[in-house]
Image (tube, rainbow, N blue to C red; front, side, top):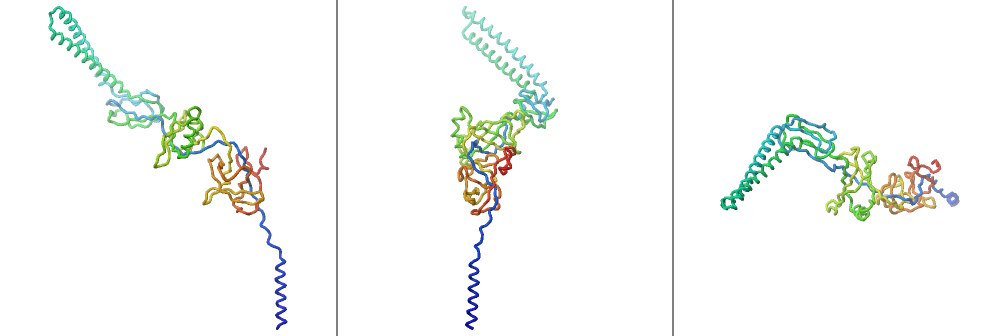
Length: 383
């Protein structure tokens, strides 16, 4: 029995000794990734805000006198110029009023001339003592009343002529004219409401709100605006295309709205082709005129976790680490980085799904293709 136990122990020792001579597990194989080396470049500060377009000028055309519409002189949706006739009203009544007012003016003028002659004769014979002071006062009063009556008649004539002019309803501004329900035969007047609306489309205004930080930055630049604008303002349509005419800031409110934490502002854009219309949702792109040094990280390198945006870096030992970053404005297909990385760092742009912090990698350097603007391995990009 003792002999059997010793044999078993010997075998166990041999097995344990054999296990101790096994090689240690090998390190995991390196993972291939694409990296982009950060470099300091000259960039223009940018930021974007949402905006809605508004007409700079719009007018609801109304009738100033009452009358039956005899002509509609425009095409709905068409272009009209200032003072173009839009509607013509029946004007026989107003012409007759003008004739009566002219006759009244003529009568009052004759009465004034007679009263003045009577006063002149009264003054002549009054000096000879043939007319009392009371009679002279009466003649003066009659002359003054005749002058007042003539002034009233002339005012009535001017009003009647205005009423006659108002029978032709004209465009107060130039622009695009909208739809109307008014047709020939309708009776319109001051109480009929708006007959049609005209909207001036060139230039057009974009209304938006600035955050308190953006407002502070703009106020810092305001002294420069007075001479040379420090910012270029562009309008981007819904399809991302840029409006061909840059705009200008034309209004920034003087205080932050306490309820929203924003500041109302507007920008003005030339619109000669009238491709922009009121009510559009657009994006405004603000870009500083003077470039400054900065770091741009390709957008595909930026990921997010509970702490915010981060990138994966490859260190000198070819292992991966995670780095939180602070993003600045977006610059096309890249983000400007305010902190967290520096020039010379290698950020992973390809193979992110295969890596985690601490693992070794084999790198392929990527660069931006100057023709397509896309990232590609450097050795595949044609010089």
